[in-house]
Length: 483
Image 1: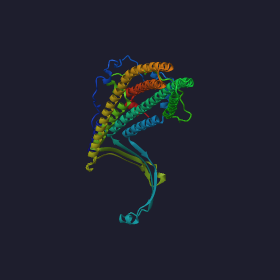
Image 2 (image 1 turned 135 degrees about the vertical axis):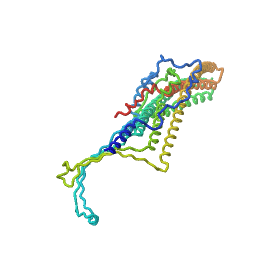
Image 3 (image 1 turned 30 degrees about the vertical axis):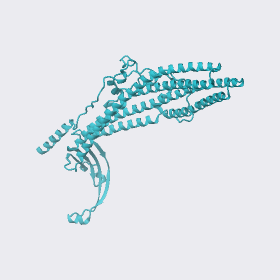
Image 4 (image 1 turned 90 degrees about the vertical axis):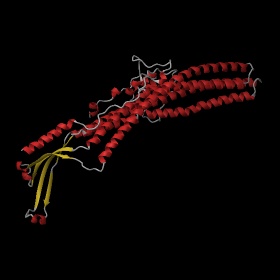
């Protein structure tokens, strides 16, 4: 009786110790945090104030384009790459449930029948002459690994963090393809604007060709002037036709992003917005809370930290509680009678005394994986700051360039008007007109290209800022564990 009580007390002490978890508790890695963005030091830019409006969730609506809005809505519904990320999230959440199941005992029930006959030679040596016999058995087995050192808790903690990281991956994937669609869309609109310029130029060059032919018929212009006018017209028509290749490819890319085959998909030509929308930037300290890829990287650091605890727990004894009961009989008639019952119950403790350095290697691997995830997290943070700085610089410089290019366009248009009047008056040759026309068209195309680049930079800045996402949208430990 005293020995039995001692065993029970020792087992109770082990169970009481299950509140501890070996391994380091998680602390979020520190990163260098600038006080402000470098590219906001210019007087034309300033950080957004708390009262400033910002894009949240449906960030593309700040561009005010109904066609873009309808296309962006299809990303979450039909984009197959987003579906891949969503399925991976469900897989990660299932792994949380699988890890959590180890908290509970495993119960198995079975029924069996065996017809056996012992060896006569073996039986005779023990004076046992029993022949063939039946064995009917109905066992109920219970096995429970007691989480004394927190191995299961650390494993659940790791899987929860990985599931939360998968949420960040899903949002990063969604944001990536949403921004890619917006970039393709505004590249397409840039081509539409360039095509409209070329169409207007073709109409003007046709008028110039008719004027030159009339002057040639009147003996005022030379055949060379007519040839130059024809060359200018045909070259511009070829440029307009060539834009069709790029536009078709962009339409195909947009179709795939929205989960549709390119066949039967089309986007009608439209104008290009004159200026991009204003994008509130916020403070650098807020960026870590707004980027889903940064949040995913930080959660993977937490998962790797928990795996260190899992590895360290292998140094400690394993405690298992096992129980078995049921009915066993040599006769089916007596199978379920009270005398046929049996049971066994008791704890077991096992400790690995030699493994050839396996546990040490696994612990070193877990620590190295943690260090790698910390470095990746910090690099992701640095990359996030670079993304914001790059696009702030692009928007600031392109805005200045746009003003300068607009002046160049106006100057080229004045030069073309003066040169055309001089040609009609017979002061200059048609070559001067061609040069002025080419300069005017080139400057107009450059202005359109700058506008398109400014719109793309706005899209990339919104993407760099997280697209209105917030780390508050990550599910809690309890939410990520739900079925």
